Amino acid sequence: MKHPIYFFITLLLTTTLFGQITDSEKEREFGGPSVKITKFNNESSTLVGGLGGWFITDNIAVGVAGYGLVSNLEVPSVAISKSSEFDFGYGGFMFYYTKPLNEYLFLSGNVLIGGGKFSFDHELEGISSEDEVFVLEPSLEFSFKTFDFLKIGIAGNYRYIYGVDVPSLSDSKMSDFSAQINFTFGSF
Image (cartoon, rainbow, N blue to C red; front, side, top):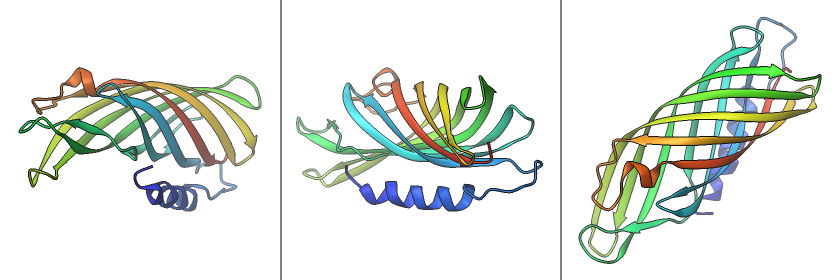
């Protein structure tokens, strides 16, 4: 992992902020850390982050989510034939629907709509550059309630990225499927 401390900070913050259980049925918050395995430019990559939200009905929630690249990933440099270090993070608003299949198993779908930023460090060239993009990411998740306050979910999603403005990359090279594991804390 490139920056393992990000995972632990995300875990600490999301469990602290969203892991509090309330007895009030009016307040149904949820949140927790996530890990994604995906590809960027045909290279396997790992993203860590978190999600959190509030149920506005029994089955519908709104919230936010954000993820950052922790894998060492290199992309072809524009100026010379060597590669450059690549960082990426994205986040946005999340619209969430969940359906209990039984007391312990849940089927959920959500869509994240937001933005992201690529940054490149061309160390040999002494150049840094950034690129902002639009991100749309629908997801389908099966989760299992292990405790009254914790669900563990496995999700599949597709990250669609639009607006890549880097000559050596494209929207299609940055868009891909991913597998995700979520640890969601809340009142279930």
